[in-house]
Length: 308
Image (cartoon, rainbow, N blue to C red; front, side, top):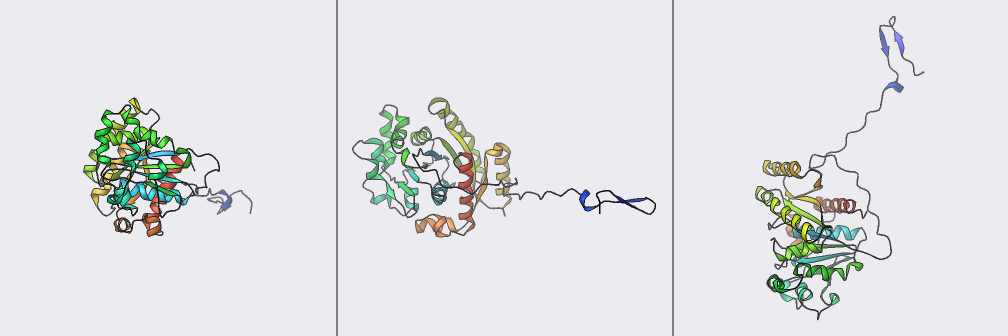
């Protein structure tokens, strides 16, 4: 049959051939944010040769929003791609250390000693984790004293930067788990970082504090670290069954648009279990939706950092 239309009943009707019909594009799958999911490339191993770590702060002055959980699991997901990752516990509560099976009370030295003393080297403090390619700089309650002691230091906002600059050539990514405050420790973390991720619980009170946090980030950019960039807001503890969670996520999207990651971390009992086990969800429950979510987040981070 040729490409011309055929006529029937004295030309009253025209019948189109299959060649005349344009193919219909399949609709993109919508993600939990209501936007089409991006086509994220499969991560490739990093190029051999000298490294220069991308430093990312996980920051929110509100506690209990998923900063520590996200630091551990994003780090593990990045390590799965063949990247060398350092996790920095910069919270005096030591939650990141606990989440990786380290008892902060049993530490003889911690990141506190690196910040305030030249007697210790990085290699004396850093700990290996059960996840291949992922190390930990632990912290304990001693770090709370650093905030007071740093006040009298010259260039006190750059104390952490001086520590991390010396070892950037060992890692592809350095993730800092910040304290739930906007004090000197958090300012140190932001000054040392290239990027910021804001984990945000899908709850109204968590949403209210974001404006104050973004104001602090803007001040650090203006006064201390002009290269600092917020690469994304990560919605955590999302429960699609509740109207409240859906409304908060919608408000975040309206306020921040494409800055919000496509990945959404849903509320699940697996995350508290991994804290007790002292390991990331990517190894504790590798096929769970939570593990897959953090693997997708790792892909988004690689793309946004141009490190894929």
